[in-house]
Length: 145
Image (tube, rainbow, N blue to C red; front, side):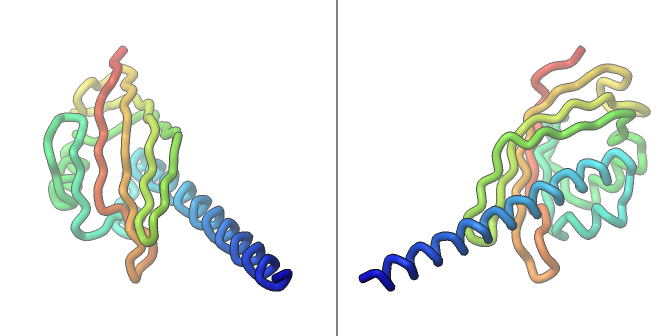
């Protein structure tokens, strides 16, 4: 009986440690994606975005990777500042979901250029053979000043 309790406790501790490790990894990747977005680092974004990545964007359009790259090229996804605050990470098997809010100041041809924009966001990550990659994203503007 004592061995069973000890084994159960050990397995529970291992599971908790692995979950914390995965959550920390997702947290870092989500912030890396934010930094790559503001800097226009398409090489990093290519590694972080799944080829089938889709976004329900703040302009109320659903776009894919090709369309996002074109929007970046046209200056329609460009920011002078961009911060992301993760409020919740949920991990279920090979899927991780990050939720929170972002504050940014768009520039160039981006909607609301020169203003401070706050939006709610959700990123859906999938553990693929290449590692964790974003497969879907949703962002909704909640305030513009």
